[in-house]
Image (cartoon, rainbow, N blue to C red):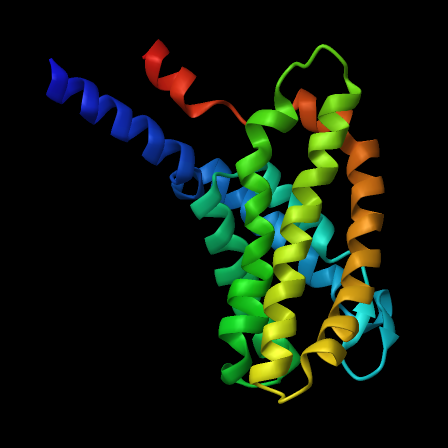
Length: 203
């Protein structure tokens, strides 16, 4: 009995972290959102600042992935798939991939950890929006950190200069994404991802 309970608990935890990306619906949804992010990343849809920094809506579909997929799924989709494709398109070389793409973009998957709080029915609806904003801030902060680290290690830039270079455009883009996600939130609630452990219990 105890062993079955451990297996059940392990299965619940694992399914909360990974698995939706393996379903037909999950693959389709992930592919569409990644494609939209790639479109938003095109030069004609970005406001450039310097050689590489820019304002754009690229993070919006990536954040939607993190709000709809488990943590590991989101990391694989955002950092792994989108990050690799974008690295090839940007042309800065494979040396930039681990920090600038895999970990920096992959950090946006931290938003997935807040799903339970974002979608939970709170006494005051404003609480949902606060958790949504906090989730995006956490994800964008992770991206800023790893992009700053890349500037120091790969491009040999001073930490302060690298931080300012990355933090300003990413913070502005993140703030815009928060505003748009707040407007989209009623739709997100309507089509919120199913809670895995509830599905298992009901089965």
